[in-house]
Amino acid sequence: MAEYDYVLFDFDGTLSQSAEGVRLSLEKTIEKMGKPVPDLSDYSKYLGPPLINTLKNLCGLDEDECEKGVAIYKQFYKTEGIKKNRLYEGMEEVLKTLNKNNILMSVCSSKYEVFAKKACDILNITKYFNVVCGSSKDGSRKEKEDLIPYAVNRLGGKMTDRIVLIGDTYFDAEGARLTGIDFIGASYGYGEKSLMEKHGAKIFINKPLEILDIVL
Image (cartoon, rainbow, N blue to C red; front, top):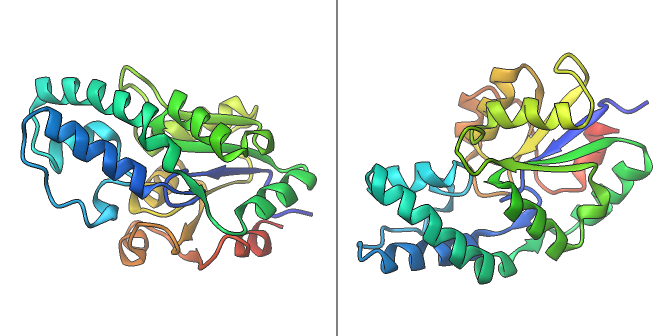
């Protein structure tokens, strides 16, 4: 019998190598706003947290500028950045195998939900997921502790069920801890293992295929 009934996947740095597209979209957004582009070489600073947090904390925008920045980013990302997603090696085999074993699966991403769905379509992996869940346009559902119950509910489950989130940042680890579900840290992603450990992560994988050993 499988270890879990519900498996939630973060997107950026867990399912997809998406840094190039996100970085490009951020750079173009900040340039268009006439602001100095910050150092974006450390992907862990902006792949994981909600976009508005990145614009505020990393790019130094105020509330009004953030609202404008989000709109500009969306335009760049949906036309250019989203096309640069690449599935991690071995991930399709993982999804296919879990699907065959009747594991209910959801994407659980801080990306805007419409972008998460489109990105999954581009990678041709939507067919493996029961639902694709992301953040809301109004900002009411952007933290992982809000996204996790939302995804579980859409899968038809309860927070007391056997659930695991697979993610690559401390935002993911913290969200799992706060909602009381298990967590698997993807050390091959963009986040830092030490930070995930500080937020409660204990189990890590070095490549996607190791997911099967834990979940099944």
